[in-house]
Image (cartoon, rainbow, N blue to C red; front, side, top):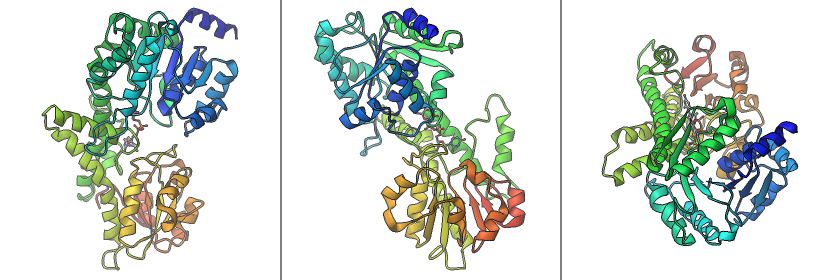
Length: 459
Ligand code: UGA
């Protein structure tokens, strides 16, 4: 307690607003609030705001619920539906969904929140000394300068750099590890319109991280916006790269992409991370951000051939697995009428998120070829049921899903699937055929016991 008071005192007047309590906003807010920073979170949806006030977290993310409850109890976190006052630092964390027409980003929420901030800024009695508006939402290069800034200035009648500050501070949180990523980031990127804004933000983080302060990159607004897109695009490129190698290896007897990844990953210049071959990347970030960068690039009249390839390799990776199933049943009527167990539906383990999950594409393709599907995921089943209704059989466990199946495909690498032994499949399946879409099994052990095929495994 004493520690908390000392830290609050050290912060003096630094208060924080977080606008938009989605996954990034709420996680950011409660991590700060838990550490004694007075945070007001703004959530426009009254039902969601009320839920959060009651201590409920509207998404699956380890630790967030505990941190929310503690900070509500300590009184360091409050939730409001209307922005009534600006804090020293105002984080903008609203969503920037994909625009369906061209994959560019939809700035509706960024624009409306910027206007609201401007309106509050207009009444100077509601002002702290020099509020710094910090864009944390992922926005394409130029957005903060050309969209956020003029909207706030017009709505407020005030000038950035004189009456209020402006910065970009991208987040690099991974679903399932967001709180840990907040506490131990690899770097902090601060894009600043003016030095005072950058200083305020850097001091804030210095206070927050103390001795664990990560490296800081201070730059202009546009570079900070670019860094977020380039980071995600690079990681997506690594994944599509290793998946291309996997697809070639699969056609090469004796080759195994897992070993190839190990071998190249030991080169420090390459690194082993994000070289797990499989069924491609999904979720709410990589697919959207790669496409947004493609759209942005085309607008800038540069043809993004590399990014186009990254995206198209990824879109096609689910079909590689479906083709493997078709080949297994070639000459035996194809997959029509066969019962296929789909193990894993979430876009990655430890989340119930199925946005852009490859499972959806695989399920659609298999259903259209007339297969009967038994699906199982430890947490994502309700979300899939909402999408597919009674066209699928929803199993209560992985063992129930494989029971009497003709083939099983691993789509998400949940730990509980890794624990299954060849005999678990052998004893239950009608025909024990496994397609390992995420390379979770020892190919020698499984290959000896049953018909085993895997992404990137040449046979
Ligand atoms: C990603 C980034 O990792 C975060 O740094 C970033 O902040 C976030 O996007 C964002 O922009 O908000 P996330 O989408 O939560 O985070 O998930 P990742 O753990 O990065 O995985 C993304 C996808 O890549 C998953 O579908 C995963 O299965 C796939 N993946 C990952 C592979 O197929 N192979 C790998 O080696 C690694």
